[in-house]
Image (tube, rainbow, N blue to C red):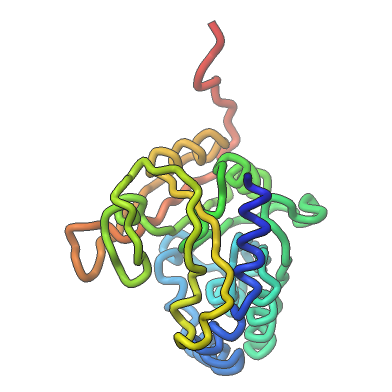
Length: 264
């Protein structure tokens, strides 16, 4: 099933994605100028958990158009991005070039990175906004995170809150299911579709996604030997009674854990 999702989602993310980013963020040269003027703003949710990124190695999984990776590079980090979309890579690479920074952008399925071991180990792995729903099993993803982090390396994960996804309609979450424990694979509109004019949305392929609960996410991270440091829930700006997204921080520690379910 994961292979089916990957094929469908790659097709969806390689149809007019570049056009959507230009529509929303401007030309690569325009976005580069914005990021150079204030590289810290796009990183505001994570810098308090990173400190000074200069000299650090960062792996941005599902890094899309590079709007988080490029500011990290501007602040002195060595950044690698892995994303399945060639159009995302094109836009990000052009923005990086215009900003005058190096970006190692790998266009691949994150679960099948060519010669993965050659990437080495990283100080930080960053994943952000609308990414976990592209996987039918979270454990292989967080196993990758564990492999690529050095000892005391840190995972920074920010995504839409599962509770909000089920119950709250927002600007970015248009179709709440009303079912928190719904784990069926669903077909839906690709995320950038709303950035395009109505007339340009015809012919866009749909994505396939699967929802996860908070327990699913925490369990998959902990099962892969990552020590959860904090789970920060951010309220919806329009309705503070609901969470909109969360930031989870987990560290890789050098310790041998006993089995969660030992054999009798």
